[in-house]
Length: 253
Image (cartoon, rainbow, N blue to C red; front, side):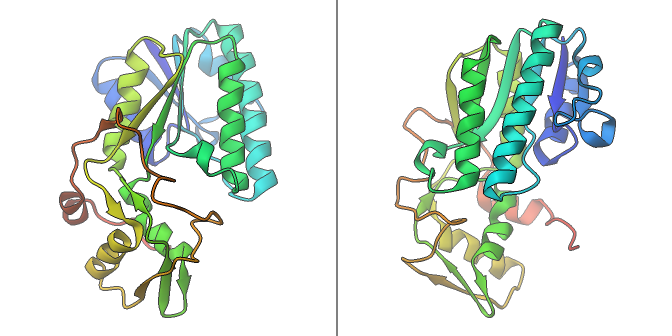
């Protein structure tokens, strides 16, 4: 098949492209740096010509409320029009476990709007809801950082490796459209403060983790169910301890 991966040069997208190419599919990494822009429409029709499947793992470059909403709505409108023109048979989109429970956040309201747009489209679809990535843990620490402390909620979550997310996305792309939502998660449950603390300890980061019941998660108050998947979630196989010692951190900017 010909499969176009929107956001195909990013953390998840580049892994999805590698997996699908490895299975023998013609796979296009579509992103502004490869000449495909879902906001302006540049290169979109040409990239999608002859494609059977479109995978969208692109993310808004800004978490600011209006910017995120504008990004997902504009990209979604342009992508749907191009998919209809190309006769695409399956749209796969990556979203977040708990999106509907995190609507106090403008970013998650934008993600919810994206999902609604996909469901209203004439293109058969699969929504993949993933839990937080292990690769995102250092950003969570930064979000709660306050001089020498990192203040985080003691809420539960079930994060997973980016490679397992990419494998789940690729699997969905090669399957029939679910016309519904599939949840994927990591193999074990942790508290946010505990796991971020383990990453900082591994990094020899001197900041102190403080479990703070008033701490927000990117502007949202959490409870123990906010970020957790349902009982039927598909579980990735990568354990946190293996990931921590085998996957190098991103280079510091």
